[in-house]
Image (tube, rainbow, N blue to C red):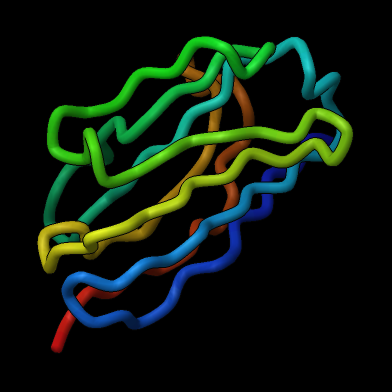
Length: 115
């Protein structure tokens, strides 16, 4: 059974940091490009970052470039998102999936940036 489990979210002040994790099971994780997506209240889900299977090629949404870093550990079937210099507009539920969103969506992890 394919499963994605996101964790690491929380409430943080503007300028703070969080590290999200997404653990995958039921798939050959190491062959997939993986990505992070987010959905703010009343908005469509949007792309945040992708990382190729090898970890050597990454791309980011313009809104997070220079602040967020995506990484992965294929031995642990896990993809990470280090988020620094957080802004209120980063508030959203964060999800992981492949670029074509072929895996079942997890429950996501809530990130709230507020003073």
